[in-house]
Length: 397
Image (tube, rainbow, N blue to C red):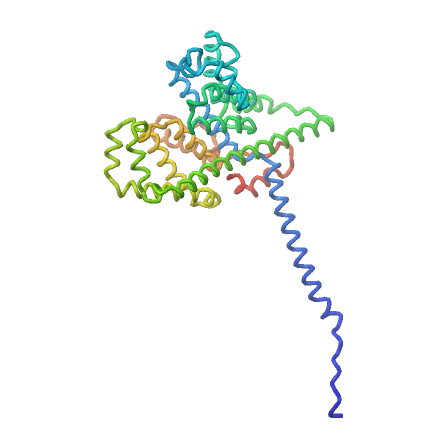
């Protein structure tokens, strides 16, 4: 009896199935979470256009910037782009054969044709800024910017390159739905036809309308994502390039930049700033740090002080180095990272300031929350407003 071994009882069915069931439950939960996350991202891409106010700010900013640029160079237009330019249309055509560029300015050597193109460029920039027939004007504006950029490509700089890229990207966006003549016309038309009953559409017509709306939304959202990615790539690559050089690492890069005659619009001011060596070194290190860290702070509140510091940096570049076009293009590009609620708050802030100073009297019967972001979901789709509220954080690129 003492030498007999105690037999081991076989595990019960409950003990064998519990780990397997627990593992299956964990896998199912992870799968459901993954599918829910994918569904949320897909809904964010297809349900509603994001950052409509930011897209409108880009349209107004780049349209105004290019209009001012063309007006500024109006006395020198013939030497830069016209028939009297040292870079003749024949030389430009030879370069186009190698690079694949093209320009409407080289279609004729006539001075009257060039003047007509210049006037049309001014009108296009103004109409694009105002948001008149924005879909067509965005395409024409991109053609204008590309043509002037390619005509004298050796006269361009980083600011011109960024304006060119943004003009091409804005073609993809619905940049005329806010703060534009198109938005005003649509609002007046909706108010006029508000009492009228919407005509009943056939099933095919309704499906085509929904497909068009979804396609426009997807293209717009992809365009805004490309713009944001372009700005991130620009800052990140510029910062990584700077850290490779000994001048930025030694804190002397800005000293040399301030002493270049080509970048001294006001030499006395440049020399005055250059006297503070410690401040110049600190600003140089901060510039590198901001540019490298920029892509990593976009999804938190830290991006607001970073954007503020970048604004000061670009203003300093515009004043001290005489590069207003480049600084203006970068400041406008940074505006894509501000949420729509920020831009929607600006008109309400302006109205409050105007009422306090007596410049404007409050309208009777106006709702107190009229400055909130309007619903951006597709009309007629149930639950689009709730989906907009659930994904409000996704409106920030």
